[in-house]
Amino acid sequence: MSPAFIISITLEPWRVRHLRAVSRAHLTEWGLAALTDTMEVLVSEIAGNAVRHTCSDRITLSLSVADGVVRLEVDDNTEGHPQLRHPGPEEESGRGLLIVDALATDWGTSEDGSATWCTLAA
Image (cartoon, rainbow, N blue to C red):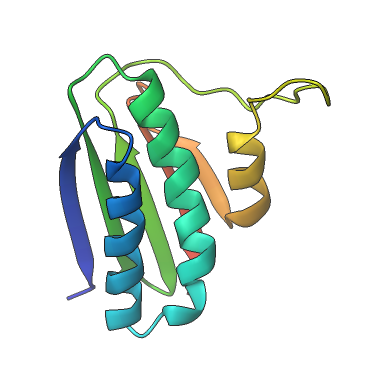
């Protein structure tokens, strides 16, 4: 059986820090400590966006490993596809998915857009 972890949280912004910590702990437990720094950034960007933009009162994060791939998924139960933006140098936000695109092996959304996922090669 492949390792997997699922957690559902309420939307207080400080909870993203908790998601980073539990993701780090699980990757370390699974022998994938080399991925923890990158995964923490991915969790911050994807979960942080979910906390800021959802209409729901909870988000769910899942982390799994299968066939040499670590998959992170954050479901916020809000339909709509996040868009990769290219903000100008004076804009203070809008770079989250650029960071995900640069760090992840692959990323995307569920068909209805309620979940955003990314992968890293293990």
